[in-house]
Image (cartoon, rainbow, N blue to C red):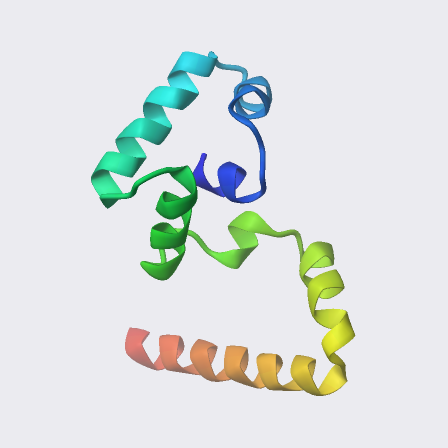
Length: 96
């Protein structure tokens, strides 16, 4: 639900998408804020992102990410791809 909040969905939209009640969504978000010591759901989302509990992929579609990054030019894509490859290699080496 924090990913949905990060995408800008309202509580009513979240409830509709998850086929649950508004009170259930409010309860979940309240509990998430308490567990993360957050002031509100926006703050909880930021904390979750910083702690790695949410990933960019949870918030944005690949197309949205491309649209956001495209104006920055191909050099930025090359740099991001290089960083992602490096992180992937590091993750693999930790597993071995």
